[in-house]
Amino acid sequence: MPSPATPPANRRQRVQSAETGMVVLKGLARMGGRASLTALAAHVGESPAKVHRYLASLIEEGLVAQDGGAQYHLGTEAIQIGLAAMRQADPIRVAEPSLVRLRESLEVTCFLAVMGNKGPTIVRFEEPALPVTVNVRAGSVMSMLWSATGRVFLGLLDEAGVRRMAEAELAEAPPELRATLAARDPIGALRRQVRQAGCATVRDSYLRGISAVAAPVHDATGRVCAALCALGASGGFDPSADGAIGSAVRQEAQATSERLGFRKDGA
Image (tube, rainbow, N blue to C red; front, side):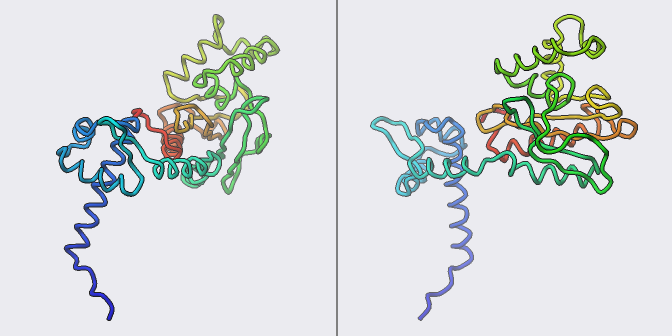
């Protein structure tokens, strides 16, 4: 005979138990993957006795382990889950929903760029039904100093190679283009501007008649791994950081970062 169905009360209890177990496991992860019972219980807001019971179950499943002392740490099964998630954390794939939402909700051209060996390189490009004519496509390398995309990497990616690219571009730029930047320490001024705003905006500085706003995408370690950018004809495009487009781009970049495992608060 088939076994009787699980009563609703028991089913709810199981779900609640699973939820509490996940709270304990996530709490341990957010504490750096290692903590004492007392510290973990305080972190998740439960009694040490209750947390201990759940840790015992998690240990049985290999999700948590305990060393010789009083410290609990993530187990081999948790590590395997993390590795599988990291293999899926491809910014190009993960950013696709954000690019589509920006294209459809704002009706603007948008793209994702990563830092290549020649500079910021577009790897995914989305256009609305009535696209703006621009001479950039997937594979195009953007300016480090005069594109919003390049400025995001310049301002937020602390790598010597990025700085060298910017310095080389500045040295080769014509005087009229150099004049659009700060007279003293132009690269430093751009970096400070981007860091203060948390994004980069340009109007007619890289492509004539085109404005753009770009925001950083962070990976699980906090490193800027990509830049999300929206652009449009300057006459009908507000590139201000706090405008409707700027806010949407920053929100979608943050959403993409979170899907890659980044936590802004560092937790």
